[in-house]
Image (cartoon, rainbow over all chains, first blue to last red):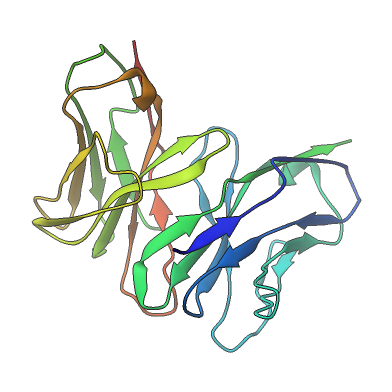
Length: 113
Length: 114
């Protein structure tokens, strides 16, 4: 079945350094990929999602590139901010069953001054 | 902004007791979902629904029932609560299938089973 893998449970960085959170997936069909962010004591919310025309999505300084050859959708940011500290989820929806979203295990990003 | 509200926000239940978590959305969305969140497991889908009076099993449906009496409301029912069901539960809604599937989450319901 479809699955999403986030290998890092916790990533700790110093403010100003680049961020990269890993996400790989397995899917029978070509899926949509998403990144959701959850700040402490808040609900998860959409950060960005892949486009059908392979444009690179960007939001709040974050971007992600869908690489079908390696089944990856890594999240990147050039310079981390303290406010980026949160739990990040990668997720996919199957284009044939778009009503169902499958999430990875989540990566906690902690930014230190 | 989409609105999804959950109740109760927090509950302590006794093992073997019945628990009902309620969710209400005002987005006119077709799809509604129940996920549970556990450290190390992320968000796992319990049940979902794409139309009133119909529900579908997600990835971890055992021990849970769901009810969708109307487009706006979706409940999660634990008939016999167990210690392993201690978790945070999130309800979410989404619109039609076009352009992928953006979920709008409620604030979560923290359930502790003792």
